Image (cartoon, rainbow, N blue to C red):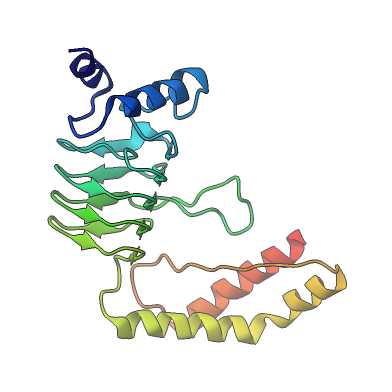
Length: 211
């Protein structure tokens, strides 16, 4: 009786034990973790901007252990979709220079009856159709279905970086510091090399000034 009452209050299904609700309540109301989330989630999961999540029937993002969900750009999840342990759903990348800022992007849309397996990562702007299965450890992509297009973009970015990396590397050496650089292409079309080179030059110059 008590279990069903708590299930109704915290909006979770019948497939979890009473200890789940107790851990959730302690984490939310005592430790104040994920306090804005209106449904019960696992105490090891983290959800940012839950107000931007639209979820369907029997969908409880974060109920599996270790989920990380960042929804600043919006996330829609269809009915009966299952999200496995340690899944990351990230709707916004950090600004490459200022980590306090996020880059605007279209929302993530995950269809009905999908299965997102353990350790999978769904990146900004991804759109998964109904009944999609994302394998364990996968990285979801959206804009380029053909490997030849993805590989071309990677080659363009590598070449643009190779041609213009020396000033930045010199600054890093002079300041005796270290820099780990991770660049993500979020466009919708295969770019021209001149455009990639221009953007890369601007990015590297901004990074150099921040050192």
